[in-house]
Length: 259
Image (tube, rainbow, N blue to C red; front, side, top):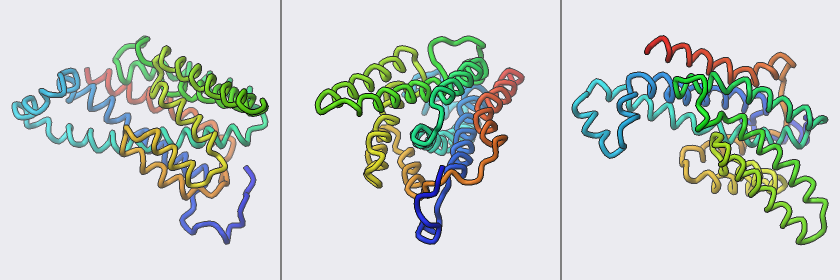
C-alpha cells in the first residue's frame, strides 16, 4: 500500500495497517479466552442458564465472581477486533492486485478454522448452527466485488444493484449463521461505500455497530490509521491469517483437557 500523505503531516500517534492487525489479534485473543476457557470452563453452568438467573447463581457460588467479571472485561476488550478486521478488509480490497486470490485465501482459512472454532466454543468438531468469522469476511468481500460492479452502472440502477448485493450477501451470512451475520456484511459494505468520506466513514461504521457499544472504541483507533500498510513481511502476512486457526486450536486443546 502506497503512502498517500507525507510522514511529517500525519498525526504523531498514527497507526499503520500492520499495527492495527496486531491490536486486532490481541483483542480477538482476549475475547476468545473468555468465550472458550472461561465460558466453557468455570462459567459453563452460568452460561447455560437464563441470564435473569445469573444473579442468584452467583450468590450461591461466590467463587464465580472473579471469572465472571474477568470474562466481562475480556469480552468487552474483544469488541475492538471485528470492526478493525472489516476496515482492513476494505483497505485490502481497494489495494489488492488479485481479488480472486484474496477470496481463495479467505475461503481456505475459513474452512481450516471451522473445526478448531467448533471445538473451542462448542466442544464439538462439527457444530453447523454457527460458523467462524472468516466466512463473514468472505461474504463481505464478495459483497464488495458486487458493489464495485454495481458502481459501474448508471444512476438508480447502480443504487438498486448495490442494495440487492448487500441484502443478498447479508442474507447468506444469516442463512449460513456466520459470526456477526448480516450486521457484519453491512458494516463492510458501509465502510466501502463511505471510503472517501473521512471521519464520516468511521461514524457510519460506529452507527452500524452501535448494538455493541464497546466496539465504538475500535473506530477511535481507526481514526489514527495513516493510510499505509506498514512494515509487514510475507511471513508476517501469513502469520496474521494463521493466527486465527492456530490460537483456536490451542484454546480448544485447553478446553478439552479441562473437561
